[in-house]
Amino acid sequence: MNLEDGLATAVAIAREAGQLLLDGFSQQKTVERKSSAIDWVTQYDKAAEEMIFSRLRAEYPSHGFIGEEGTDDEGTAGYTWYVDPLDGTNNFAHGFPIFCVSIALYEGEKPLLGVLFDPTRGELFTAVSQQGAFLTTADGRKTQLHVSTETELVSSLLATGFPYDRQTSDDNNVRQVAAFLRTAQGIRRPGSAALDMAYVAAGRLDGYWEFKLYCWDMGAARLIVEEAGGKVTFTDGSPVEMVRKMSLVVSNGRIHDQMLTILKSC
Image (cartoon, rainbow, N blue to C red):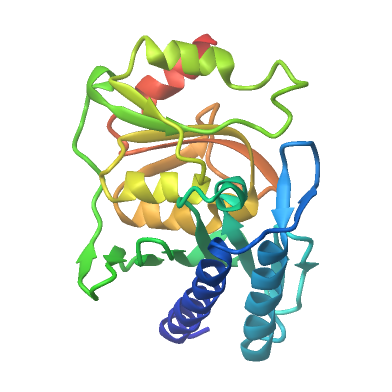
């Protein structure tokens, strides 16, 4: 597998999908409910996923493909593409401009490349295993990403999100948010898990945690964080595995144990 070619392919596809989303951002959306009344999908999620996998299958017909909107094909080559065509659907549906396209390639459990494209800002986050993580801005400037150097939770800016079953489950992150409000400098809730993680990689955030994520939410962003020098684990501190559903702590590495301690106290 030529990762340079794979990255170029994923970048081109992510940009194309991002333009599709941007074109639809100001248009009327058709919203359907999935797992709960607040778990939405639009026609643009579906159109973007269909386009992305059509392009990927044309290039890599023997690979596996897993996507948020129902695509699930194991393939035969040992490689799997994890795709979230629109991470931040609720934001998108409401006209709130924080969302992205996420595309990742794995070989078994090993992340090989990750691409996130934020079409509203024109920001492209990319990483290839053992080659670093990078941000390309709308004007074409490319810079290497590095996590922040903050060492104290009390001075850290964090982000989080809430599960779609939060209205019916007590395991809804409310206790954890209350605990971090008392111990961190600040908490943000932008609404796109992939971008939250990318912002940790870029040093814009010091840490992030969230429960009940899916593999397509974090597939690309995980590698981007790790290649920027950060750390990604399950909320019990164990190494990440590409299971379908998971709960994560993401940080600059320096405040990771402090975040885990707070979560374990809840």
